[in-house]
Length: 306
Image 1 (cartoon, rainbow, N blue to C red):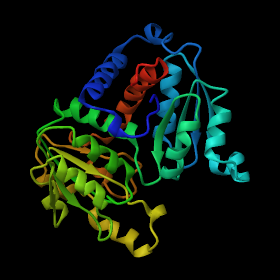
Image 2: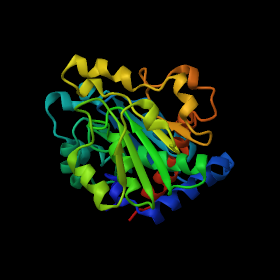
Image 3: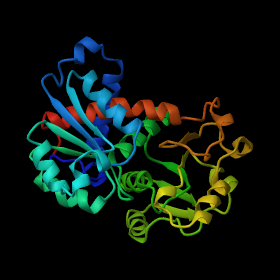
Image 4: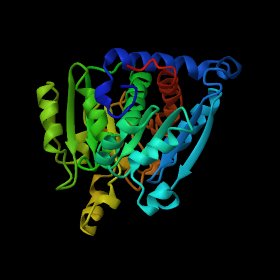
């Protein structure tokens, strides 16, 4: 349908089209694109905290000439507090706007409620499930930094069990050619079994590293992630995260052409001393999200998303 719920909706053709449009919007004069979403109204509903995703979506709408109404901390500051179902929220909010961008704590609840929305809904992160627009901007960033999105050796570090950004990005890699993964994560925070099966069926090579140095060696892309402390039950699981951080000393084993990505926010996973290094691409990655989401909003609101 017209909703954006999972990266499985995006093949290489659709992804390439979004990348090309994002590149155009990056350099287009504002006066030229201010009418693209003129008269359109988008609601952003965030039931979990967000900085980059919420603000980049809202900025994207405004830059294209649309308008935004927003509910931040909707879990506490909306009728959800009174027990209103998400399906009813979509019915009501969908009567006011042309599209809904939502972050929700339950992937299952979001999926169940989407059919009740009378307007397009964009998943801006759902529990420990998926974060499709993050994966799209990650692929866009890899393309901008390395000039390709295939034939890649990718190191993935951190929380791979609850990290929805990892889940979406790896599913996108199943559509690409000659991808190999090297994983390094705390005990108990590895990839879910169904996702590992998807990787195997798609021919993605998966190895397990025994150290940060081993993970980074020979990598084209390093995807570092935050330990999802809010989803963990044991404090010792959080403390173990420090063993998976990238320190300045690790740069000596990282190839000169490699790029370090992180969906942010970072909470100690990357030493700030690495920031000036040309291989540190995470702030450029966050900026890329604005243009990719502009491109996606155009397609969704103009009915061009299949």
